[in-house]
Image (cartoon, rainbow, N blue to C red; front, side):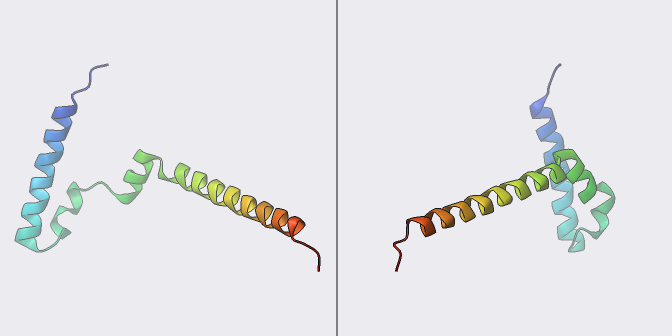
Length: 80
């Protein structure tokens, strides 16, 4: 496989220049929507929804760890 990273960067830079020109000219991105990747396309490209599931599992793991730590503290607390 051959990769041309600088070529990809130069293509992206030209696209950014078009966006900035449109922002100056039009005051917003409304005339560039056809050039933009949709949010769904972006999420598909980066596997966003897979990371959402990972985030949820991390939160669940932390919550479980927090509960376990609280139980340990309770067991160690002196009786009154």
